[in-house]
Amino acid sequence: GWGRQRAQAGPKIASLLALAQLAPPDPLPTVSYDSSQGRLLIIGSSAMAFGWAERLHANLSVTVLVNDSQPLPMQKHFFIANGNLQSLDGFLGQFQAQWQRDNPIQLDLCTRCGACLEACPEGAIDLSFQIDMRKCKSHRDCVSACGPIGAIQFNQVEEAIEDQFDFVLDLNERPFMAMPEKPQGYFAPGGIWSNQALAVQKLLGSIGEFDKPKFFAYQESSCAHGRNGQVGCHACIDICSTQAIQSVFKSGKGSVAVNPQLCMGCGACATACPTGAMTYANPTVPYLGQQVKTIVQTFSQMSQGRLSPTILLHSGAAGGEKVLDQLGKMARLQPDRYSGLPSNMVPLSLHHIASTGIDLWLSSLAHGLAEIVLLASGEESAAYLPALADQVALANQICTGLGYEERVHIISLDHREDDVLAEEQLQLLDQRLNNFGAKKTVAQLATFVFSKDKRQTLEMSLEHLLLHAPVPLAPDESLLLATNALIGGIEVNQDQCTLCMSCVGACPGGALIDHLELPQLGFIEKNCVQCGLCVQTCPEDAIQLLPRLSPISKRKEKQFVNEAKPFHCIKCAKPFATEKMMTAMFAKIGNHPAFAGSAQDRIKMCSDCRVIDLMSQPAPNKE
Image (tube, rainbow, N blue to C red):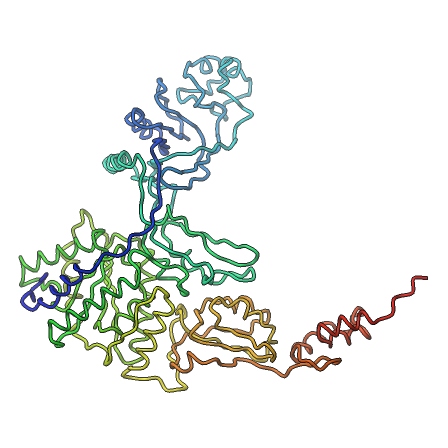
């Protein structure tokens, strides 16, 4: 029962048993790693790097990159390179490193014979076998002493060197790769020896060939990243903690490229994506929807409708289960101080807490959940929390605006040492979990299917919540939302807009529509994802985003946000532009001689008549 209310936990236990009987989700495609060559790059201070290189060279092909002046090992058990690391990218089995030589002596060729030390008249070379360029007078006696070995090359200083590695052991206090979630195969334990030993142990266990799931699917046609060379949405790029997502522009159209080897499966990109172009597959929203329906049906049946379930979403084995186990244990051992999980709160394990968003939450409320609680247990990147908090706030704006009260909550815990939550934090967690109370579900439970299409799932949930709202919106009323909302409308300044229709071609969701024959700009609000591409594309700066939730009819129906009097061809009378556009064009042309006389009349013709008029003109006299 996980708490003091274990005597009332029958519906919750029945719900968990029903979840366990569901068929597992479909298997995911996989991506592969191959680190079997065992190529290791160690970066950091020479003292620490050489120590680990001595221990590991028997099992791995070790390269140490040094940029300090420490005595070198006299025996060459491993490869030593000197220089400053310039770039490092990649993943387990495919790291690409580039460094710049910063000294004439190339340590990979140097035999440590010491001839250069004896030959140097200034004493500019020591046992680090590096030349102090402040002392060197360029006699080049050292070059002669090195002879055929050729390890001293003054002309190759600052040369760029590239190499590939399977692993990187970064012993610097500040890791070279600065992203919150480091790629697999990159170990950055810092300067503490015990942490280094644990990292090396993990490293040695990573030699070989491995597969992992491909956690995402991407549909480029739905992506709102860019059109006409303009950048619109970049939510997935901003939130990715592994920097696995990159911007790609081809012929003016923007999309994103995701490196599946770098992806760690948090799902935050799919949560942040307004269009549903990026979807999460571990598991999918339809499978989570099946779990939600199972919980609601089983819980309601076992409680005979007296209670409605709340779900607690947590990150499973990554940290959430350990926190809940600790809380349940304390509720049993110290029932006077801890209550544990309420009897109506059903825990649901996820691969990562950032993988669910407003589409799942609102749909789950529509299907009968009382509330949704997200437990961020401290092991996830801090970069996810603001984005999750924004979506929670947006969901609650919609719920409270429609009279449902706040229904979605997030609880954030600090990072835990040794997977144990401090007593003060555990008590605060216990209080938060037991302060939600028991809210009623929506009056009429939804029957729609949780779809793989994010916009379809979101739209069906919004329509259901609008239809049964305790505080319904008036036909001409809209609920204003935060600026980062993924639903809303637009406002067009009709005095500035010339109906050039640039925005129509830029809109990825088909929210903006032109008329085939008349100068009219149409808009369907439910298709708008608030990506801002129309704002970026508009040459007249005539468009503003309006994040809001409008009534069902207003969201579904086509509205005309601007229309103008058509301009008719002076030859055939066919409408082909607007009077406002033509007036603006003539104002810009002015008295330019290139458009004087018949040339100006041609501008007033449609494209067909313009060609006919040009071809009917007499040929110029060449005499």
